[in-house]
Amino acid sequence: MTKEALKARCLQLIEDNKAAIIDIGQEIFAHPELGFKEHNTAALVRSTFERLGIPYRDKLAITGVRGDLKGRSDGPRVMVMGELDAVVCPLHPQADRTTGAAHSCGHNAQIASMLGAAMGLAPLADQLDGNVAFVAVPAEEYVELEYRERLRQEGQIRFFGGKQEYLRLGVLDDIDMGMMIHSHAGVRDRHFLINCDSSGFLGKLIRFTGREAHAGARPFDGINALNAAALSLLAINSQRETFREKDRIRVHPIITKGGDLVNIVPADVRMETYVRGTNLEGILDASEKVNRSLQGCAYAIGAKVDIQEMPGYLPLIQNPVLSDLFAANAETLLGAGTNIYGQELMGATDAGDVSSFMPFIHISTGGYDGDAHSQNFTVCDPEMAYVMPAKAMAMTVIDLLWDGAAQARAIRDAAAPKFTRESYLQFWDNVCAGTAQPDSF
Image (tube, rainbow, N blue to C red; front, side, top):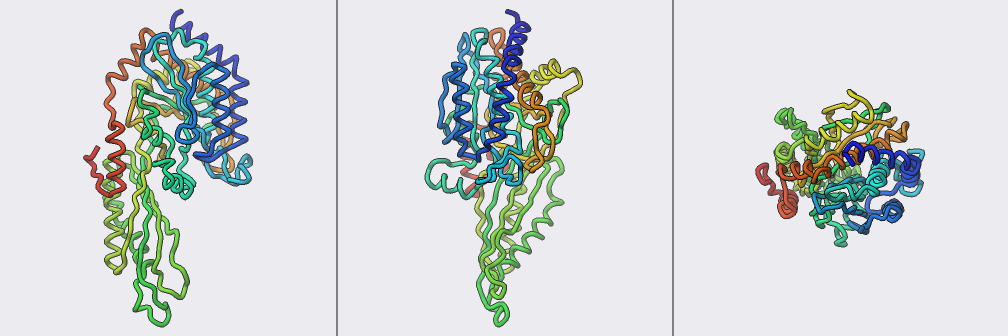
């Protein structure tokens, strides 16, 4: 069988399963679950693997599932990934009325497309010179932080992101390269978005501590922690001209507690912020400037400040060779000139962490209406949202694992990952200890 004939057979298998793939996407859309709680969605993934005869491991990072399709030879291992979780959007028409969870970010389409690719590739495994891992991962959305902090304290997780947990646990140690898709809200037409940027971020929990006093009778006996926090917002704003345009730094602090009673000098004031950017050097540089601003303003008022650094996500690194392979297959499906290149997406994803370990692509797709994470987000073209990505990813897998997996071997051999598992964990340890430097990775 030629590669073109193999692709044609794969596309026909996916087309034959189109209704089932769409049903999976719509079923998950109607029953959203939040991170590390995706038990029903994981069960659907398991049942599909069982039907396809794909061996799997489950309960990875609590709810994750990984199926492994073995090719005719033990060559490189290519990953097709999808995310199990929903986001919190209680006003969405399909939101869970108890938890507020809703698939207003399109992760349901990721799982449907990942399983759709499996439907096309599983019957053709004896034509592949390597292996395929179909990986369903929990908890991409950075939400319910108090719940995840409890999980962390109980020793069930260390990181708040599911892919980060997979990296920590070694679930992806044998993967050579990977791909996944993501919705692009508001793109109704049939397009794939290639080589899009996505930021990384660090999180900070900040507590200013002053001294209470009667705000009317003896304010001079107090130390006003709210003044220190308010001053720090000005100091952070004064740093913005020092952020380089190419780093695309975003700092967006909020005050979550401004005091206790209006007639008491505020002594306990809390803030939260992210420091976002498109590269680690810029993020760490901006993070240090933010910390100086917080510390200096606390000193100026006579207060104290505690800064708790929280591991966020790393910037996304799109592999150009994988991108080109996917783009060519996308144009085969949708026509020449239908791909959109290089859009800047300043949201963050823990796919960025995976991309620091291996060659990886994170492709955005059309077929959606409304705004991301909003009550009006919906799938307007189920075939584009669920089926076309399955076809494009499956075709790309065939390119990679054809002819002795020559393409996959070349990409793997040329890879220069930023991290090993050990250096990755050490990096985040240094971030949380406040000792990470721009040259520490």
